Image 1 (cartoon, rainbow, N blue to C red):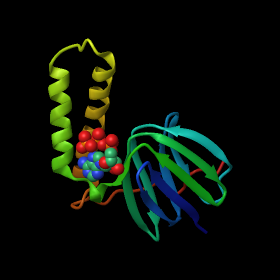
Image 2: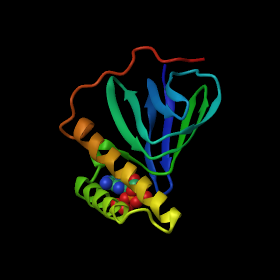
Image 3: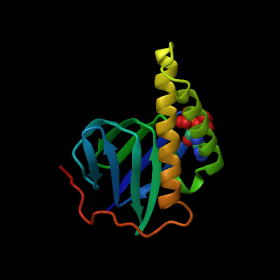
Image 4: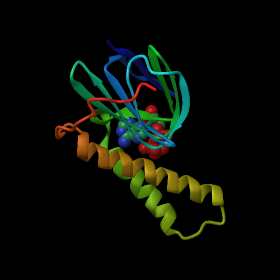
Length: 150
Ligand code: ATP
């Protein structure tokens, strides 16, 4: 038995497929979604979405968003998401460098710009860490064999 999973970001469909389990970084904690899960709606924090499909695990960085769960489908609406194997490391390093430069200029008069730089730093740091941990030279990681279906 499987559950449909769709990860959609503002500019593209990042993943769609029938999977065994989806693990989501919900704002209230990590959620393991199995087929036939009870309906739920939750916000997602910056982190990693994991899906297992035919015994193979796929990992996606996500910068935040929403998830809607129905018994046969999990729909993730992401601010931005990428398969960790697609992460452009040079781009993330450059984004991190820019954000650090802006933050090093000290407390900005423009609070919005300061918050934006902090958020950009969090996104680029996540991408770099996850590309190293799960990227093309990934180590084998384990998903829980049993998620919840409550
Ligand atoms: P940048 O300043 O490099 O654009 P960003 O953090 O501002 O980085 P986002 O606004 O989060 O970028 O994402 C915009 C789009 O670019 C999304 O589709 C996201 O998946 C993609 N993206 C951002 N950074 C990377 C990266 N390092 N590798 C692959 N795709 C990326």
